[in-house]
Length: 444
Picture 1 (cartoon, rainbow, N blue to C red):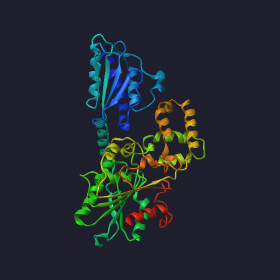
Picture 2: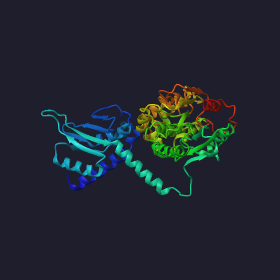
Picture 3: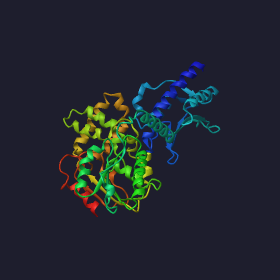
C-alpha cells in the first residue's frame, strides 16, 4: 500500500468516522440497532463508551463494513447504502494496516480509537475494535457551542434571570413568591398574562428567563443562583415554581441537585413536563419529512408539533430526547422531600390512530422514492409506532401522558388541553380549568 493510498484512506475514514460519530450523543444511552452480520455494538452505561466490533472474514475487514458500523451508531438503516459503500478491505494481518490505523487514530484520538484485536490461536475470530467516548464528544461539542453562543450574544440584548413584580421585597416575607418558568422554544412574553393573573390573585409573582437552546443544566445553574440570592436576603420567603414544558426539567434539575438546591422552594407545579422526553425532540426531522410528504390539509398540524420542539440541532433538544444522558441522570435522583410536587398533563391532542397509520403508509411510499428517507427508516418507523405525543386522549401534541408522569408524584392529574395552548392564550385565564387547578395548589 503506497503512502498516497494510506493518506487517502486515512482522510476518508477520519471524515466518515468523525461525521457519523457525532451522531452518537443523540442516541443518548439508548441501545444501538440490533447486531447484524459481522457488526456488534455495546454501550457502557456509566462511562458511555460505545464499543463496536467488526469481525474479520479470513483476516479481512471491508471498509464498507466500517462505514455500515458508523451508520448504525446513529440508529440509521445501513441497508439503504446498498452499492454506495466503498470497496476494498483492511487486512488485519499486515503491518501496513496497523500503520493506517495509527494515522487514523492520530486524527480521532482521544475520543475515538480503532485497534486490531488478534484472533485466538487456530481460530478465525480476529476483529477490528472501535471505541467511541460519547460523553467526551458531547462535552466538547457543548463547549464549542457555548463559546459560539457567548461570542454572538448581544450584551445589550435580552437579559436572563428573574423578572419579578415591582415592590415584592416590601411585602410580608411569609407571603410566597410565585415564579413562572417557560419551556423550550418559548419566551417570558408568552406567560406575561399568567404572571399578571397571579398578581390579581394577590400573589407576588414573576418569571424566570433563560436561553432555552442551551443545556438544561446551564439553565438550572442560572436559576439556582437567582433563587439563592433571594434566600440570602429573604430567608423566610417561600418560593412556588409554576413551570411549563421543559421549564419543569429546569426546575427539577435545580431543586433535586443538592449542590444547586436553594432551599427556599416549597411547591413545584409542572404543566406538561417532558419528564421522560418527547419523541418529537429526537425525531424532529422525521416529523419534518411527514410534513412535506403529506398531501392532507391537516399537514399544518404536523408543522405545529415540529415547531414546538425543533429549534435547530441544539443542546436542549438533545436533552429532551427520550433516554438522553441528562434525563437518565435527572430521573435517577429522588424527589426533594421539602417540596410539594404537582403534575398536570394534557390530553388535548387531536390526531387519531387512523390518521397516524395513514402517515405510516405515506412514509412507506416516500421511502421507495427517496434514498435519504430510506436511510432514516429506523428513526421514522420507531417514531410513528410510539408517537402517543400526538394521539387524542394520550398526549398534548408534544408530550405524551406516559412520558410526563414522574415516579413519586401522587398529585398527577389529566386535563384536556394542548401543549401550546397551556396558559398562554389571550383568553381570560380566570375560570379556566387548568388555571384554577394551578391556583388551587398554590393556595394549599
